[in-house]
Image (cartoon, rainbow, N blue to C red):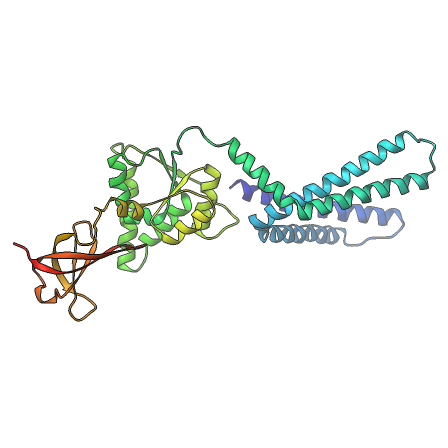
Length: 349
């Protein structure tokens, strides 16, 4: 909201400046003896020119991304500081030679500014990135909290998934859950979807969020208005806000998990937690499972453990709908979960 108000004020100020410049030019021309007709039209044209300039500036700034700013800003600062330092040193040097001819003064000033300007440009283009990394590291270390991070940004996928409510109720998640306004808006859009399945997921997410706000849950829920304007993707906005608030991201999204890790943001993935809590299964271990459907191969059958782990049993298709004892042959861990391969051992009692 503040940014929009500043933009409006900037446009109005540019229009006023355009009108002022038009009046100034008209006044100078009339003093020179020229008769200006349609003064109001010229002032309106000046205001229109100011509006066009303001829109052009705002459009240009819209295309300046955070990455571009972070790359260019240190270079510009280094160049400006070098030029100012060169000019200050030349003026200090000329202070001791007040009777020196103006030509020599200009020559000395230009030479010193040129030398320092080159140094600033060289350092700005070749060393600014290193300085930026150093300053960023120092700043990050300075704001590093002494207590564990308690702020957690919640992704839309977590609310739709729903397991976060039980995890919070068990006490494994504490602190404050930050819900960005754009995440809530995305959840509302899903709840208003014409697709029945998407609409049900969206409404489930809203119900979970409402439940988390109740006092029975040992976590705080805060709706934040922060919305990075330089990014349009929800995942990228979450990463930016996580860095801004020094928070962790709660998600079940595999892609967001990878992007956040690349950006150095800690991620709490509900799926990783669920996989970690599944009982360990080793090869040659005997277990009991109910075979409920056919597998991909001709003789395979598929069953599921209580935690949802898929068990693929060779030579088990003849025993569909029955409980059997199987011997584990291998365990495959994937990003989507765990899959157990086994062979038929005996019928369960």
